[in-house]
Every structure is written in C-alpha cells, then in structure tokens.
Length: 207
Image (cartoon, rainbow, N blue to C red):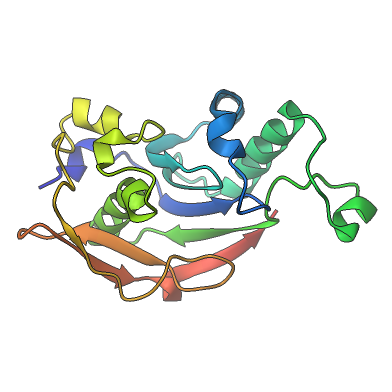
C-alpha cells in the first residue's frame, strides 16, 4: 500500500487538471523542459510544494500544497501558463476570439481545481494522477511513463516500484474534460483500482 504520509506537508492541498486548447497536440511532453522551467520560475516567485504531477501530451494532473495561510493558486497558474506560452513560437492555430483578444492558442482558458479535504481524498487523487498514463494508453505500467513524480515517490518510499501492475480499472464515469465528471482512482488491498467521484467538490477556474 502507498505510504502517503511520507509526502504530506503543512498547508492546503489542491488537485488540478489543466488542458491544452488543442487536445490533439503534444506540446507538454514535446516541450517538457520549457514546462519545467515555467514551473520552477513560478515556484521561485511564489513557492509551493509539488506532491504529485503527471504530464501527458495534451493535459496534466497535479497536486500542490501551498504555504500556510496561502490559497493563491490562480496567480501561480497564470505564471506557469504565460511562461510556457512565451517560450514557444507563435505557430499555433487561434480562434477568432483569441485573435481579437490577442491571446495565444496554447491553453484552455479554464482549468479544474479540487480542494483535498481528507487523507482518503488525497490518496484517491495521488493514485489517480499517477495511474493516468496507463489509463490513457500511453504506458503499460505506471513506472514506464517518464513525465511523472511516481519515480521520485518510489525513491522516497511512498510507492512500490511495481505499484499498479496487473490491476483492473473500475471507473464509474469518464475523466473530467470540458465539464464532464472527474473520477479519482485508488488502489484497494486486492489490487483493483476503484473510483470515487468528487465533482461536487470541484470547480472550474478561468485564467
């Protein structure tokens, strides 16, 4: 069983889903170094702890813990999105609205935030995001996906290296995309991945 307590730090914890505007693109993994630099720059200006992060080609999931008495994640996301966009050439397609507003066509304007309210909620989301590359068919094992904090957490003893191998996936609904329900997955003692919906606690944020 994962030992999440090793990875908890004081302060509020939040689960995020952030999507590219073009869900067929691969900018996040193709330009992973630019994304990392954008995150590092935001953390220098407004520190936060990264509990878990998985980057897929066109979307990413992460869990942050902010400093005590600080809930200003929107400004941090604006820093990350702006820095990443500025690092890329202006070759993306843009909608008429984006052109009229002089906006880049990199990101969806909205992202999803879910405040983690318990250790169980935290565990669901940690497992869900790390299993996501397998769920979407990008890897056959959790450990095979390179753009993930799973490897760091294995070294810290939070996960076993073979976590998620040979499990069944049980989901009540699809992943949250453009307003659909978000499902968080967690492993149980018999090696299944079960689901717990938390859409009632999630909210959409515009940047």
